[in-house]
Length: 152
Image (cartoon, rainbow, N blue to C red; front, side):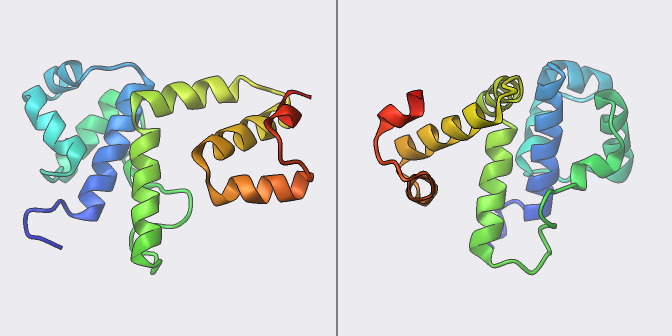
């Protein structure tokens, strides 16, 4: 790791701050005002460029309405879980996407779909469009290879 690269834990915590901030529709400026800092400092926190001290993290948690442990939670283990570097990198990419405006919008819309069959078809469609291994697996499981099957 280059000395100027953010520490993976600082980057993860920052991505969780960004994700929660976007989830509740709070701007960087409003968060900064609540903390008594500049929005540029919030940007640095969210990128992991600057570390967030314990008292500042508590203040951020209070403003964002979560427990401080929220910023360390990860669905499949932690950054120090002993996973290969590629898995950690993929996990960080997923966290970055989920914390983006597009990721939040996509998740909100997807969660409103209650039909589990339709959800699986949407996943198959997106995987096919992205030409991922998941698309090949989904096609093999369903026995179909044509996008037409996604409509029925």
